Length: 288
Image (cartoon, rainbow, N blue to C red; front, top):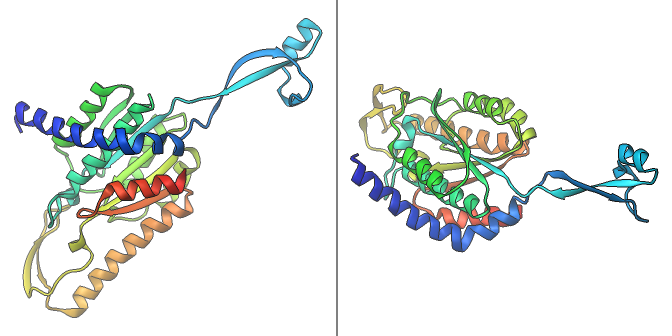
């Protein structure tokens, strides 16, 4: 993709997603993710009815009369976008690939955070960490994130959600709002997610294509595994084969929902041909 074409694509995504974040998600995002931390602001003289637990004993001893610590809500937050860029994100049979929808959702969330004057960071992952952009504020920073989402060429095609979560834990010492965007056609991440969910406010956004849910009967078909590159001759005429695939797929979906619920994290699923706007709004309203 040449620079001119890339800038055109970035601009197109900015116009679409910024409109959504301005009109729809700004207020919803703000009320859902209020600053939860309390930061020390000042000391003042004790007044009747104040909580005695907030007495500052050092200042009280110095002035020989009671003073209390005053705290205020920390409004500034940090949002981390964790985006799966493995091979399976290039699947799509309707209007768009999963990757394109994931980019739009990530951009919408980023602009919503920008409206709130929050910092936004990005982790692109496969079975390794492909790219880490530390959290910063501002429109130009969000545009850089969109550019990377559009342009990044992953080194690997496989997926490892556990590795991505471990990396997040290492780089983010303070509590962050975390959105993980993937198709989650993998498992073995529940334990790590529980640990991360205990420290950060995590939401898993599963983006999927209707055709992934079941394989139609098309006889003998050559298929390529997007994550391994392996070519397979598959007999889709076999009812048992189709049932096994559907069972495998459904198990991954159940594992995703169960893992995020058990970890105290939020989750939502959006099909590529559905309105992710409605899904996000519904999620924010439930959380708010």
